[in-house]
Picture (cartoon, helix red, strand yellow):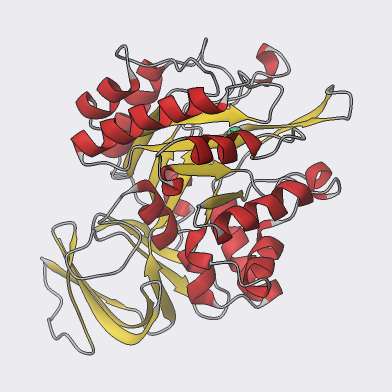
Amino acid sequence: MITLIKGGRVFAPNDLGTLDILLVGGKIRDMQTSIDLSASDYISVIDGRDSYIIPGLVDSLVHITGGGGEGGFATRTREIDAKDISLAGVTSLVGALGTDSVTRSQEDLLAKTKELRLAGISAYAHTGSYRYPVKTLFDTVQKDLILIEEFIGVGEVAIADHRGSQISASELARLASEARVGGMLSGKGGIVSLHCGDGEDGLEVLHRCIAESNIPITQFLPTHINRNRRLFEEGLAFAHGGGYIDFTTSTTEYSLSHGEVSCPEALAEVLETQCPIDRVTMSSDANASLPDFNDQGELISMSVGQISSLFDATRRAVLDYHVPLDLAVQTVTANPARALGLHDKGRLKVGGDADVVMIDRDSLSITDVFQMGRHAVINQVYQEV
Ligand code: ZN
């Protein structure tokens, strides 16, 4: 199918003004002030005049096979499905395991990644989990990255968390070098996704790892940086130093009333403090359990992360905190794509993948989604493959 979207205001994510966009065979074939093609059996022409056109969202952390279990078996969370991903405007995502790498496996993660690909989503995954030594499919992280196409990094490895393996700086450096070399040899990012808990030590082990090794700072993507004010400020300093930081959009009332910095507020503060926004990403942490622990480390409540929170946070940043649309969108498109090494993702450009989202200019809600050129959401209705 060939699709021509006419007259939309294009945020690529930078504001390119009003353009027509031509999608052919899963790629963006052309972007011009005016492209003239008539609708036919083979060409779909879509009126984009009431829309902003943005890249498909890139979600760098989704627990696609479900997560949780921290409160016992009854608290295990469900798998995600392609419909929810698509309605959320997400066209690319990275699946990962979390706390549980015993009843959740790499095999299952890989199978689920393949299922989502068959549903039209550009799905990838990380090998490993919270744990160190890392649980892999082959015997090393390098082999997993080189030999398994879907794996693009390792993680989320937990630091500063009572559920983590208390990894040392030198262990982290060795793990990062495994991922980096595996990534280099397979043409992937090979990044280390770091789950940052609420431990007093914050990013300390990451700072030491970078100081004591030759691993570039951009090899790491620490997430949940907005979970409390202390970690948030440490994260801003890390971004000033050239590192990427990731905010989690799924949240709970309890967390927000106990010191979490909401994503819209966090983005506004990034701009206020002139933190380099090209180093800032957001992810949904969808289908993770969101356990709330009290000061004694006791579990007091549990809810489930939502993938729709990714665009909701983007939208709220624009509507409630006056973050410019192009900058808010950048944190869920171009920035995560760059951090993950996904070069054809996260940008609207000729030759790039035809992952496109149309949003209503007035309400800023998602109306249409194209995944590799497939019109997966039409006027807020999901279309089965
Ligand atoms: Zn996490």
